[in-house]
Image 1 (spheres, helix red, strand yellow):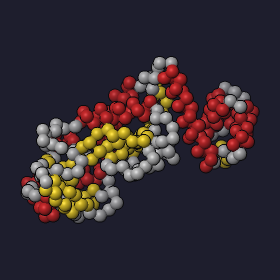
Image 2 (cartoon, helix red, strand yellow; image 1 turned 90 degrees about the horizontal axis):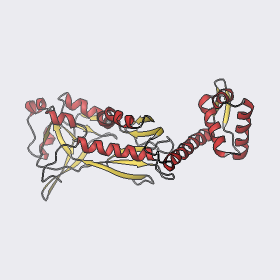
Image 3 (tube, one colour; image 1 turned 135 degrees about the horizontal axis):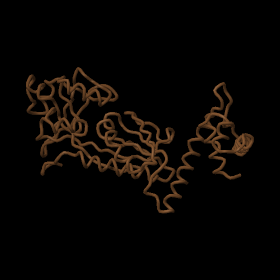
Image 4 (cartoon, rainbow, N blue to C red; image 1 turned 90 degrees about the vertical axis):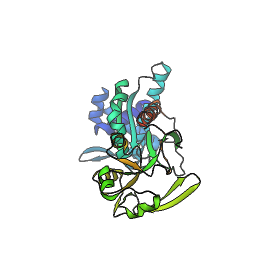
Length: 304
């Protein structure tokens, strides 16, 4: 049994939903397709497909086999391209997971640059602020921000951004600007807390560290909510430069307490373990790293 040929047949059946449609796509007879799938199920000892009113649908085992078989075919094709010296021409599908606001602001608007270099490549971007299971979702590369939990994922550090206290000029004009971290308690705060509740921040200036509990009447679980509330003059927020990069540059948002520093935030590229990191995933991580260097604001000489 030609394993790759059977894998390709099974993939085609799942994607077309029937033996006859798969046979037409593969330009073979329907009995040959049915026989291949039957042999595959006998070989594995599990049921991979179920008949329904909608045609053939994969069982749970069939869905897992489909995802891994498709990835195996893609990696084999990529290995052929590299061996032939054409690895620069990426092709197939790249599955990316990333946070919603970060991607909307900085990745999606620049994707055409990446796609124009690789006209045979498709990108499936899964926008989600949650940390989804990369293997279960078939993700090739995920962009994650902050401190990484213990994980068996392969991680690559891409960039680091400063955090600031931020507000609009209109809010500052109406409410004044805090002169010390402690004065934040007297201001309306827009609190970003994915898990709900208030957040404690450590401000540092020289050897002095001040811990401040940032509280407010507005607590949001998504970064997009922080942006909307701040830009509507509703309060002060603590956020990364990435979240308000263009607004900081054009003066729509101002940074406050700049003589104090806050813990920076890191962005990482994560790759599922257990298989080779694809050239597509590595190239995309390179692309994002270049974007982050491009949008980084000038750093002060004494900035850490």
